[in-house]
Image (cartoon, rainbow, N blue to C red; front, side, top):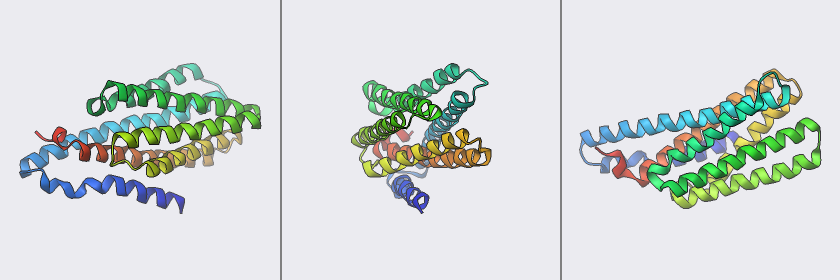
Length: 213
């Protein structure tokens, strides 16, 4: 039921621009707009899919070993910079750097949480979890302040859902429960594609001129 509610929230954000194409002039300019928005959507999806993929790979490396967790962590942190860079065209360098910094904190706190969970340190795990959710709230507040088409509560719910799904992956790894690990990964990937689409739609609505020829 919670997943349905989150999907509806994302749909309400993503569909906010659906009725605006008629205001964008000729059919030709609408076609250009659709093409430009489609490219942004594809780029945003790739960034957030990388976020899910490298987060999952890092968790596996940190818990089960077998590969270099540090190299994966470097690639994962670079993805956060890439996401921040993706919004600079619309919000400027300072905003892009701020988002990248907040997302780096998101990853670094997750690493603390994984380490505590692997060690069975419940106190450290609880402390990291509180920091993690606070960071998610900070990201939601920052994005919402930049774009009125990104409601803060909706973003909070979606980011909290992401944290829960990553937690499910970590729990599955610790239990050596491969089917649950796969299910949690797939669920998280689908969830973050909804977030990527919602962010794209919000940008397109806020900056319609950037999506015209």
